[in-house]
Length: 90
Image 1 (cartoon, rainbow, N blue to C red):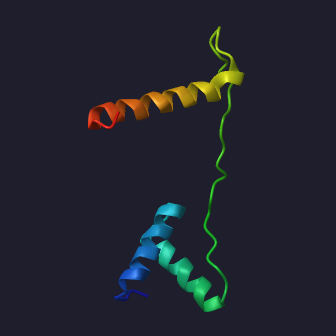
Image 2 (cartoon, rainbow, N blue to C red):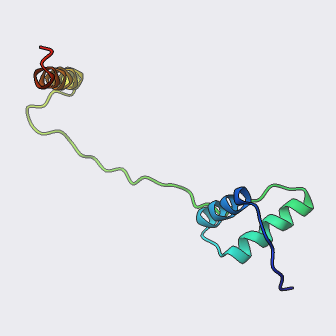
């Protein structure tokens, strides 16, 4: 059936979000939402599993992984001191 429907702004946003998440058309998304709502069940999106392909990066020779926190602290201290010098609060 072909018809014209006026939806509220919040419903439009939900439809657009569902379209984006499921990568489906407006028609398919609206029909699924209506079916789910009229049947009293939640809408099930077709989600693909998010996978991360890990690979060993290794560290450069001479870098001690145990002292990386110290490096981060030193960099943060340097940034705070540089900001203090720029603002004149040294």
